[in-house]
Length: 402
Image (cartoon, rainbow, N blue to C red; front, top):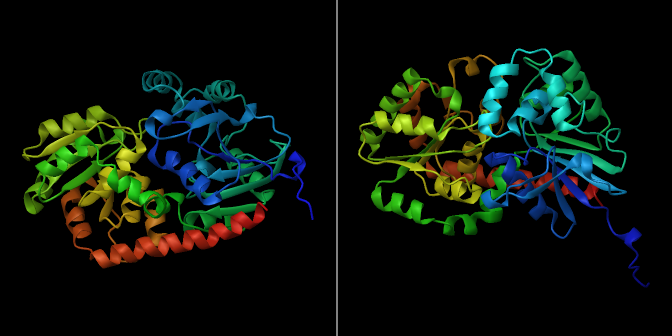
């Protein structure tokens, strides 16, 4: 039988849609993973806004609302998109300085969402959650390893919008059991699949391990016993908290002979602030403290991959550490232990029950000690198991796109 070369016989393009239109480690890794897993399929990258993040290892991202293909397969790729509202989404797409002015002037303004709708060009309350109704050209709409640990703090209108869109989707998978339970209680069946970032070592490990930048090489040379890769979000940035973090890190450095390396896992608003790390480092007495200023996601992955352990507030700092079988523990605020949070939700879903999960600032040193005590074999087993689970489920997703 003669093969047809007609364009109509070609599979529709696959559009990967998510928050990879701003600088955040996990969001920028997701499309790399899924595009690699899709092999030869025609893949495009979409967000809420057109952005070019290739200088930081990301993609040239198109605005979804400006795509005009006749037919596409739309895959929502990862991220805490089920509970991200329009105001948050719009602010995180601004420059840091502009975002701070917006937060100060609009945070308690009932009209703040009207501003967000104008910025985003949509009146969706959960703009990173799309549907066939919102995008009539979509052949299929899928949700892949998305997050949203629960409806806590979200209004009924946002929750109802998200559930209605998910109800019409062709496939839904979520990255933690808490999100699965929330959706199940609302009549949405969702499979569990590990976060896309568990694949970074399996798919890109050789490149990442070889990507030891001059800055990383200098750090490794200055730290014969290794280093602790440290990151935390800007909301830890008051003076008293930074002083406590500094004292705790000094204890870790002295106990284990480790250098301490601060890095940013995200530079978008509400993420990390280099000045917080500078202020912490200035308070420390340890002899080997470094600021790693690269925002390239492959440099960040390499820094974590070569570390003795990871400590930080980022879920994807943790997951990259999982992928490279490095010890890890998250740093959280006190109140995050009392309500659903994505870091603990992911760890309790996929890691061993007795694995160190998270600590508050006052328990930082003890938490790092616990993380460093985990046997390397167990770390490697977890990394391998999650890769296998991800690959197994991806076959289901790929079969829906045929």
